[in-house]
Amino acid sequence: MTAKIIDGKEIAARIRTEIAADTAALVKQHGIVPGLVTILVGENPASQSYVSAKGKAAKELGFHSVQETVPAAIAEGDLLALVDRYNRDDSIHGILVQLPLPKHVNEEKVLLAIRPDKDVDAFHPVNVGKLVIGNPDFLPCTPAGIQELLVRSGAKLEGAEVVVVGRSNIVGKPIANMLLQKGKGANATVTICHTRTRDTAFHARRADVLIVAAGVPNAVTGDMVKEGAFVIDVGVNRVGTTASGKAKLVGDVDFEGASKRAAAITPVPGGVGPMTITMLMRNTLRAAQLRIRS
Ligand code: NAP
Image (cartoon, rainbow, N blue to C red; front, side):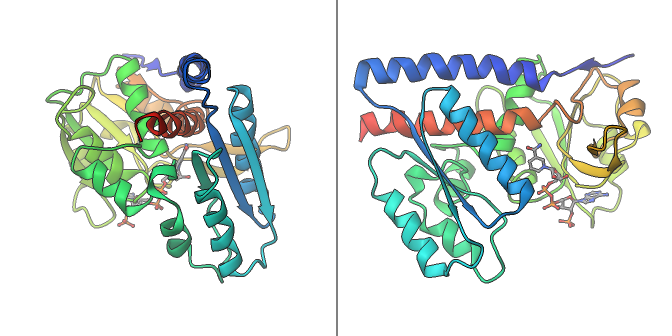
């Protein structure tokens, strides 16, 4: 079997077209323009490029987009005051504080300061709790992107054996929680593996859907993939440089080996990555739509 490639760029582009149409409708019918502020602390080059990609995507969709850049030495209290300013700004529906933050700033305190109804990353405990009880306002962006990739590429999730490798709060735990909920695009039987799991290969081999978010190249090899499985590789690992001097990226899955057995697989780059920013845009639109009800 040679796996079908799940094209994250193409699926993300389709979803952005849907978001643009819904945004235009929201503006026309209610005069509400979705507003997103990104807050970047310091000059970390990777963070700078993520933030500028988010700002660009927001502008392209017709959002009101604000980019705040503050020095790495900012006092925690000043950063909290900045967050609070946007909590009270009615033109802003989504607040995103780019992580990681400098060591002298308490990350948890800053994330807790964001109003849950503007928490478009869905990291606030209120939003985590709502997800777990099956009543979310926002889904965290990378897991939401994974679920969309699976649904739109035809994976059967109802009753499926899903194995998630990785238990982080931003990927592993939320995607596991989302796929075990009652409802469409879920209803799976979910197993989570981590570094203390006795035999990850044993679990992986019986997965109809295998989601790997370990942050380790080749954490999953071809022999760990069941024939006909859907494989989602979330990992982004920099391993040396390409001939053109750019960082060479690989995922967590041995792509070549896994492609011989899987029915469908995401590439790295071009799989999960393009979905994450798109889901942030969808959450910002949703935050603006929720304003109609309040
Ligand atoms: P993380 O916080 O480092 O968590 C990694 C998890 O994987 C941990 O739970 C760890 O177990 C588990 N793990 C590591 N090696 C393993 C192995 N060999 N077998 C079984 N479990 C193993 O990472 P993360 O934040 O979830 O990110 C994971 C990867 O996804 C990274 O490469 C990251 O760059 C990428 N990522 C991509 C996107 C995107 O938009 N494309 C978004 C987020 C993350 P323990 O808990 O026992 O340590």
